Image 1 (cartoon, rainbow, N blue to C red):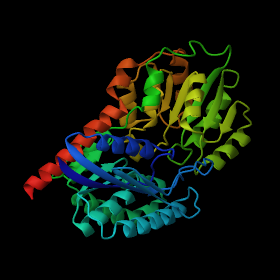
Image 2 (image 1 turned 30 degrees about the vertical axis):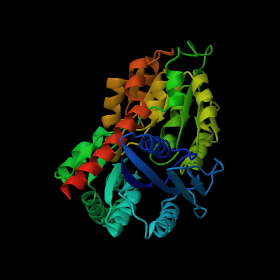
Image 3 (image 1 turned 180 degrees about the vertical axis):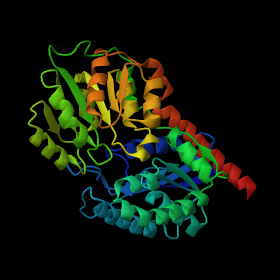
Length: 401
């Protein structure tokens, strides 16, 4: 049986709370279960840091028979761009030192902000290893939308050049959203691409296979739940205060999470004078699922940025698995996906309060299990297929060498 040693670079890993952590953990488990090859995996990641209000203990070193996990302690940081950049530089420096002199068959890097992919490309180039990239966002588009126009004009060429070097360095690139295909295939026509999306984890699948818990909302008031990041990308501070004010007496909102715009959201809620919105700290998944099941409607929103027309939020999958009505302020591919794949869901244009209210009124307030969706987007099945793709790519590359 052929042996493969794989280095996994990921900024987030279990028990941290993030789409990247859940995805990478599932992939590592799938790689270790491959029967046709002897796979050994080294994971280099960080100690849990996704949310400042979520504290969970994790070992810096974790070792099993074929798995080693090294979690790097980051310096104190918040959600600001400069803080995040400093944290990543620390991670990259420590990771580079940890792998110096080690031999790997392949480097796998999963990246939502490009820089982890760049780190993977650098490590692979230095060691002459194969490189497999998992791209979860188009960083060049996102940074252009988020930064002031003058600054974006200056830095965009730098990030474009960095992206070009990184993508061309890989033997294969996976795209998490089909919305990314037109961007990457046009720029890198000779690159090999696949499409293994996010999916539904087992704890959500178990809930999704059962009948709904709340077949009708509590009398006179619909319970609306949002869970996740509260950053610029979600734009909750731009939509929730006005929507909550319009639905006073008809809906109560519970928002669970943390992020760079939470303080701004709190200020906007205070200014609007609404009393039907509750903000709650991040919580472990088991507790979060209980909150999901108590809700009548699950809410999702992305800011009205051009870059977000290509993304497919991982939150859609766990929301849809639970059979709850979904109320989503998204556009582009995410809107297309929800409209085509998720029953009892409504979509409105991001930031449009009146359209949001109209969409809310169209929801059927009952739980409806989405069994076909749950089976189609099982995280375990998707990651098994991706693990097989990684091993196949390694074999093909060796045959070409």
